[in-house]
Amino acid sequence: MTEPSVIHATIVLERVYDASPARVFQAFADPRARARWGTPSTAADLVYDKTDFKVGGLDVSRCGPRGKLIYRVETRYLDIEPDQRIVSTELVCEGWNRLSVSLITVEFQALGASTRLVLTDQIAAFGGKDMVAGSRAGFNAALDNLAAEFMAETADG
Amino acid sequence: MTERSVVHSTFVIERLYPAAPSKVFFALSDPDAKRRWFADPDNPMPSRHEMDFRVGGKEVNAGGPKDGPIHVYTATYQDIVHDQRMVYSYDMLFGATRISVSLATIELFAEGTGTRLVLTEQGAFLDGHDTSETREHGTGVLLDLLGAFLASNS
Image 1 (cartoon, rainbow over the protein chains, first blue to last red):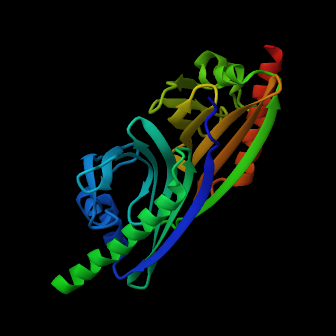
Image 2 (tube, rainbow over the protein chains, first blue to last red; image 1 turned 90 degrees about the vertical axis):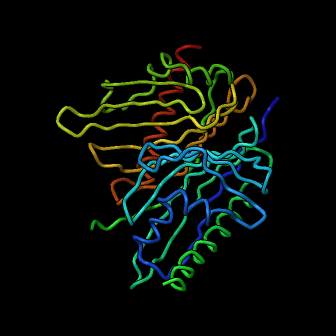
């Protein structure tokens, strides 16, 4: 049986956050923070089974609708420049079926007292599902949630 | 603090080989076969070659000029479909400097009695140490070496 061809795409998302690059970087480095803002909606859940934020390290997480975490994600960190850059790969699986692999670059740039974040997702999708649209929607929602993290901080302080 | 930069790119290279997809797949996935063609033409003797061809497995290829920094290619296989496809990520180090991180997809399509190979490489080139054009040229040279290997074994 011949598999369907692979779909390649590049997704670029930008945000400006009212927080320093060090603070925004920390929200990516800390898996507890990531589990909080990385969940795309209140109806979904993201659970880390294994985390190892270092070059060569591997995170394993499960996500999906709350109570039905059907997706398994393996994140491998390839380049980390503190407060400046994180490059990783993400392999998304559903059961034994591998759906996509992404090369993800997150750049943190100081913009006055704020941070300009640029996320570039270079994706290879082969699972038959529309993983390109899914990946774009997921990261868009997560990056919006990330803004709320810093707003909450300002309100608390 | 060092100024960081990333240049993202995608290039696609195609080759038509006079060998069946199973033979092309073997040349790409068997460590002994791959060692015979996968070499830097300028520095043909790697100091180290390790290959664990399975999903999650790694490949390391290290070498370089006598008087220059060692070049280290480290790949992780992310997806494998026997005789049809492989997806792997890799990074390149010159000495202690990481110059790029890439995601590569190789697809094999039967065409007549031969194989059309389509390689798609999505790259992130770091801090101006290397360019997509140089990588595309080097990758094309490697695919020509694979072609010569397949022709000599047919």
